[in-house]
Image 1: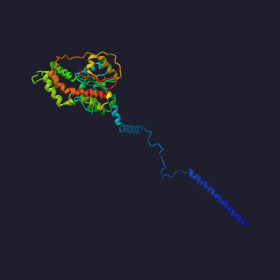
Image 2: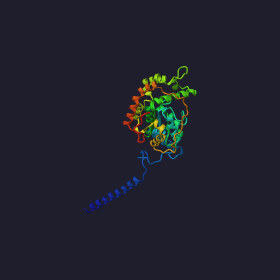
Image 3: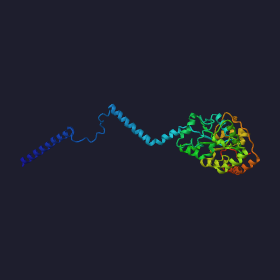
Length: 356
């Protein structure tokens, strides 16, 4: 029994010793033996790629990164680039829209003489004829219009003073809206004159231009085929009366029709309506209204003398006056009512004076 017990104790100790030696070798082998080459490492994301720091490879990598950034910019910024280009354009923020032969030249000369930027290559140095001429008007190419004003950088105010613009509020609105211009920044000025007197002044102006050698189509309606002047009475009773009846939308003396269209596109307080009679009799008040409307103070309050075309004046006969009054009187009354119902900016005359 004692020998058997000793044998069991010996075998137990031997087994313990073998286990200890075997375990030590296994642990040593596990931590110090190289990995099996047939098995790929779990990850090499932290290992530098072959040639990564090579100059050529680095340059290619930089090009790829730059191309990705530029592609993202182009994808996300096409509209932004166009807006930047448009916003850099020099465009008028003042439009003197008319009326022709109602004092618009005197008004524009006064404004330009006080530092407001004018078109650099326009007819008469105040008119671009962009909106009233379909050959010039192109909504898809704003640069055509902006080219007239690229020298105006740094000016607070830029103005186009084409009086026939009064007939085309829709074109003005579409143009400025399509290029992303802030429409609320646009200032509109119009000066109104008794319509028959305006028509007579325009007639005399056409005669003066013809006598000076001008042969433009728009002045030729007061002449016969052999170049003889049509007397104003005959012109008023036939040609003018016919045009006013057949094409009222183009009648510049139908002021109320045009103003209604303008305020359908623009806020009423963006439009300053001036009176020719006040300009003639009290120019200082008119100039004050312009300054207040623009929110500035001009150094000069003197109205320049701008009658560069001496006219051989013609008077209106009673017969022609009565015929034209029948056409204009209703429109004039509608104008007074319209301006009373739709008051403009605070510096505007209120009520608007009746034509004399």
